[in-house]
Amino acid sequence: MTESRTAIVTGAARGIGAATAQRLAADGHAVAVLDLDAAACAGTVEAITAAGGRAIAVGADVSDEASVAAAFETVVSELGAPTILVNNAGIIRDNLLFKMSTADWDAVMGVHLRGAFLMTKAAQKHMTEAGFGRIVNLSSTSALGNRGQANYSAAKAGIQGFTKTLAIELGRFGITANAIAPGFIQTDMTAATAERVGVPFDDFIAFSAKEIPVQRVGQPEDIAHTVSFLTSEGAGFVSGQVIYVAGGPKD
Ligand code: NAP
Image 1 (tube, rainbow, N blue to C red):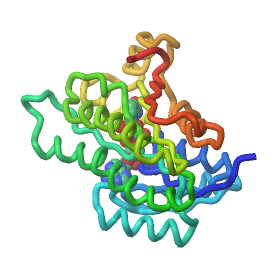
Image 2 (cartoon, helix red, strand yellow):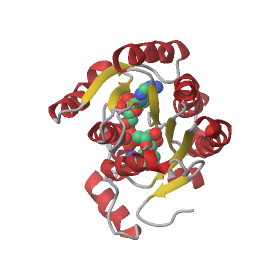
Image 3 (cartoon, rainbow, N blue to C red):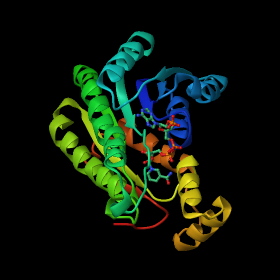
Image 4 (cartoon, protein in one colour):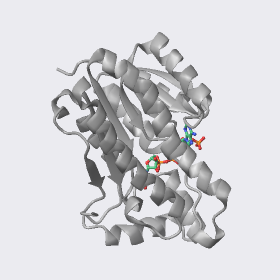
């Protein structure tokens, strides 16, 4: 029987975050569905409560320290101390290096790296007090390098180093930290990439599927399933790992 805990999933209004929030709620946890706009979280919260789960919408910008502090106050008072954190919020600002603006570099670093840092620093206090914690950070196969994504690939490689260091520092408190590096997952983010390269999304999916060993693109539920495993009680000896969930080997 899984113990019911309080989980925070960032960027959970849609895509991978929404599927993950629903899966953690189905696993028996109370879930803070956090995204930039609280109103945008309504669909995820409704899906969870309709299925008999417990969730609240929390509006916050993970790259803003005051916003993160306010979000934790809300979560602690409404759901209790969080001991599961999924750092999933993300943006892309793709461009070839010579055209990439400093603002687009900073924006991507701000959400992925600064955001994961601020959220994890706030969460570890509650996890160390509880003597239990599960941190899952979203990396990407782009960490290995991807044309047009100098900012994003640097951030996603940074997430891997961050995760391994968390595992080393926090392990003694019963806390594990792991990263998931998804390949192509069918969400608004990959739809935006298709639009950038000028290919209809369906064609982009069909073309990408042919290149993937399992011959299909990923769905948000594929990532949610992996998060469910990594946050489970039984996964306490799995820490500091990067799991490529990409329909084939990627590293
Ligand atoms: P998505 O559909 O674009 O959803 C990302 C969510 O994060 C959006 O709801 C977005 O809100 C939110 N967000 C952005 N900036 C935020 C901030 N500062 N504070 C709080 N929330 C913020 O993306 P996805 O495809 O589900 O991706 C989820 C994660 O997986 C990301 O970290 C992404 O880099 C990673 N990933 C995705 C893929 C893929 O193929 N889709 C592959 C590898 C890794 P707004 O809508 O308001 O911007």
